[in-house]
Amino acid sequence: MEDWFERGVGVSNILGKLEEEKVFKDPVHRYIHVRDQLIWELIGTREFQRLRRIRQLGTTYTTFHGAEHTRFNHSLGVYEIMRRIIDNFEGRDHWDDSERLVCLSAALLHDIGHGPFSHSFEKVFHTDHEEWTRRIILGNTQINKILKMAGNDFPMKVSNVIAKTYPNKLVVSLISSQIDADRMDYLQRDAYYTGVSYGHFDMERILRVMRPTEEQAVFKQSGMHAVEDYIMSRYQMYWQVYFHPVTRSAEVILSKILHRAKYLYQQKYQFKQDPIHFHSLFNEKLSLEDYLRLDEAIIMYYFQIWQDEEDRILSDLCVRFNDRKLFKYVEFNPSKQWNDWPKLIELFKQAGIDPDYYLVIDSSSDLPYDFYRPGEEGERIPIFLLTPAGDLRELSRESDVVEAISGKKRTDHKLYFPADVLDNENVQGEVKKQIKAILYK
Image (cartoon, rainbow, N blue to C red; front, side, top):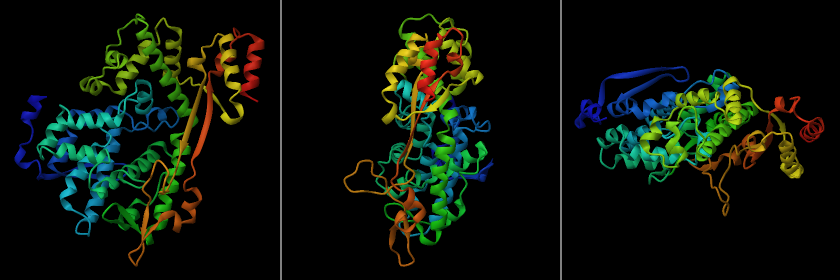
């Protein structure tokens, strides 16, 4: 690491411009422009390059085969949208151009702490990608060394923007609000790579009507329909793509593989090949260096070799994940069917099927848009429209479309199980009949 750093750019010109602009060809934004030496150096760090090996949408590729894009793609996209926003803000009231590099760096690095199959991984091992983002930016990393060249306090500034604790609320809103550079990129990018039409909206129009205020970005009233379109795109993407039940089935199996491997390790099970990359995870003593070594190629390597393990559950789950032999699902309404749950668990045990790994309730919920209600928890900063007279009006008060979904949280529950195992001739007929009577009633 030190050798790389010593060969890097000098402190004197880290805040300057590149001799020649660098351009990334991008299928979503057409071109991503890099003009700043600092941004170019950050892209070249080992921590940022690691994002090439982590998919943006985790297990979604099992449902939408085009969803192979990475967090590297997305991070560059968020940076590009932020760059365009700042170009549009230049010279306007409430915009401080000295915040430019902080904004661009935070946009580029906002996902730097994500791990492989991020959200499933976090649930099993109790990690937090936001905390890892902070540790990478502030720790002994190439990213930290580059950021420090822009000022000793610069890494902390970038970290605080991402953590939403930065004193300039306008800067925070550009990367973390109900309409920000992060969301505008992932909606379009995920729609493009999954091949769906839901996530498309008129971003160019939104950027043209975006205006800085002291505390957040607002939107000219004349651009309300473009903002409406964005809100509805987000709503559709969550329910048609992000919460797709087949993708969730793959996530359920992924989580159960990791749970089983951790359990076996803690029980002193003798793996055929020592899972050395997981030692610190299983022992809950994960160092920064160990975390940075983890990517999806490593995870998939172990899933391949665990197919041949003596443990029947671990082997079966890995085969299912690798060969896409996923669990089936039925709708599950906890308020009406909760009494069925203990019955199902007992019946699965009678059938010789471990319910801890083969019977799972998975819940998805989303709040597409909300506005501040005094006294309520989970305050979300509303989107404001700027009238020709200079007044600010909250979006759902002006838009019937947004008002119809505003503040309405939708939750969906599904019950996942291996239908092929239930059809196995080894499962007692009467037990099988009772299980199916509950599942399919």
